[in-house]
Image 1 (tube, rainbow, N blue to C red):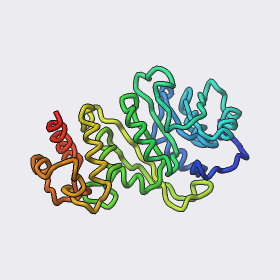
Image 2 (tube, rainbow, N blue to C red):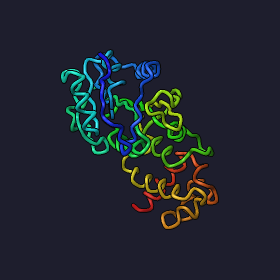
Image 3 (cartoon, helix red, strand yellow):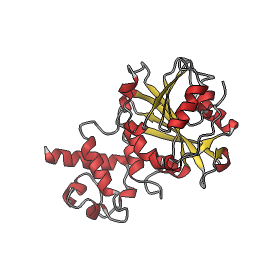
Image 4 (cartoon, rainbow, N blue to C red):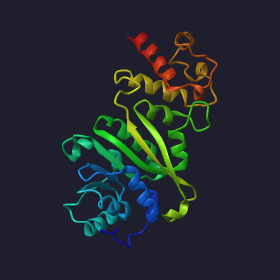
Length: 267
């Protein structure tokens, strides 16, 4: 089975950069290691390059594509019993709409454009109980943010919020020439694996999200100033944090402890 041929235009509003390097495609699929009976969802199959390689290993594949012209080409290139294609925006997709929850959970893959990568990951993490793992091709900068350590330049809101529910691991870098048209930056493949036990309890998560969002809204501010109106100095000190510290130097355990403190105060 080969990728589809299409004359559909590249739509800048969708941030389309199509992966064509066969070596990189093979390496991505090797990293995913799909088994014949796995239930895999591909987000943004585009011209079907990754789709075709995945279907060499899978019995069937589910995909969602926002571009109707590309969706038409995919339907022409792959039989419906092998490719179950949904046309629409993955940012509004609920996994429950795709049918019963697979026994082992969904395996989600995709070459994600920069403009939707962060909101899409947050959207999927809201459904983390239905997901086995995720493998994404992203801009390298985003992968560096996902896997950053406290105190590093890339560490921020995305790092902490993903770490609350999953482990992120950078796998390998992909050069611009692997795409058409070539982007101006390097990309990278990341594996995101939901935690069996999230680091932040579901009941605490809204408070945790509020703390993290406000703390990183202005990176140069200290916790004392950045969390003004949400946390008192006494609350910050009560969990062993320095009110004069900046948020990029605080690990997830510190944010979780502060959220727990504020949640208890509110109760």
